[in-house]
Image 1 (cartoon, rainbow, N blue to C red):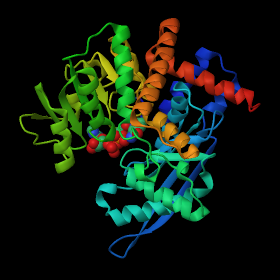
Image 2 (cartoon, rainbow, N blue to C red):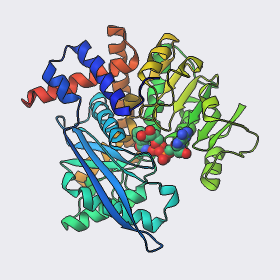
Image 3 (cartoon, rainbow, N blue to C red):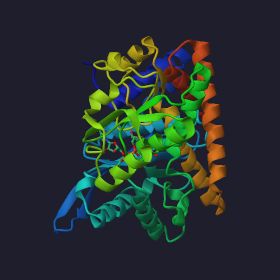
Length: 415
Ligand code: NAD
């Protein structure tokens, strides 16, 4: 079994692109590593009077095209290599969607499911105090990721503003709307993926109305994919899963009711009329569109041959290993690679920053229209590269992005 360290995978993916692009050694080596990293140890008072020690991370991978941008993940398995990988993918993501930002990422090793709201607030504020030297609207701007929410972003923005003594809403995105959040940020990741899926179906000559979808990971990205896949593409939700397991109904389930059930009970299991399946079974169901929307390394050399979907729209970061990529390509599964498919989130985060800077806010329709333009253009840019270079869609996306970042590094005279 090849090593599934996400950062090594990110480096391996870059190496392939560097070779194909004929990058010089210095540029290639520069792009293999983050420019800056900070690891912090934070004491946080718990509700029971104890002080608990947490490890936190912030990585700025590349800032040639603009300030670092990337979410904050709170997860028990969070570690520096996951953050590095996610920061690398953010760099390729902002480049493929062509917004003037670099790539970064952060996180804390913790289990927010076991923490009270007050404990989360103390951790959020402690994290900002610990990494503040890395952050500013022109240096590095965090956002939500797995198990972080608009409320957590609000506490973080408030802590930063308290430290600098001025309003700087653009220092963090994914904020609640009353505090300078953007209309349309909540479902932006999934919406962008749905627009990309629509374009994929168009070039593949597929009609998605009445066809089936399965969703692994039923959080922010996954829930909105279920709702919008149905609303905008006419897809039928037949399977969904979260960290506890999944549900399946071949006749289809009402996405609104599934989302309501998940929000009310915190789980999917027990949803009326559906049979229980495992996460592994979900991936292998015969569906038209699969949305991996949980975590990395779920489609590997061990199960890729059993994946039955026609389109895999990767809303999660890093769900497919390089070995699995080759198998999916051979089996003619059309993959919308993560940093293209889930770029809607950072795109609307960028719109949020622009609105914060102008202190002037756009209506929802304008956000949707601008997001659609960005996703459609990025999809076709990558698709043209795929046709021209006869590579898979992930390699095509890498060729587009790495060339853009390398060019910016060269223009700055860094390499
Ligand atoms: P979230 O915390 O809202 O939801 C995560 C979901 O995944 C939860 O339903 C959880 O139960 C489920 N999950 C966790 N472990 C699982 C497992 N082993 N098997 C199946 N399900 C599991 O997080 P999110 O923001 O929806 O992020 C999901 C993915 O999308 C991550 O890879 C994240 O990096 C990526 N992403 C998110 C955004 C964003 O704007 N939120 C943007 C780009 C990419």
